[in-house]
Image (cartoon, rainbow, N blue to C red; front, side, top):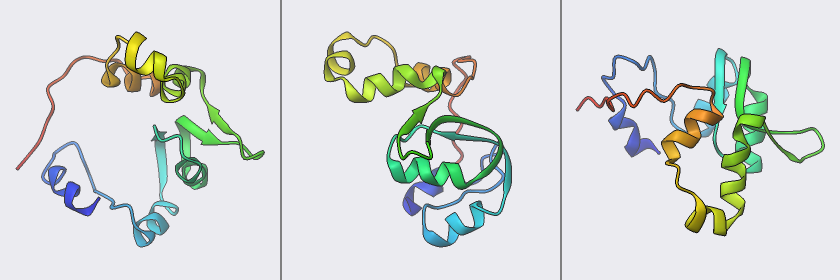
Length: 116
């Protein structure tokens, strides 16, 4: 969302912020990335992730058969999104922990960095 991008401005760890609109998506399709990480299970987000050029893609993708594909490290995130019993009663993990696992990142519990 455009109004949320202000939270990311002046952050020394971010080179550029892209807003989710047609113009910005066209630009993103023409950039080569080291990593693309998709935590959204929607067909649209997965198809867009497939279109991007990257050395490595993590999270959720759309298979050529139009089925959702989740990498092994994203299975728990997938199950959580489809099982209310697990999501609301059994799960004891934080979203931060789950997303770190899905994206093959070490959860160092670093400080959250915002510049205002």
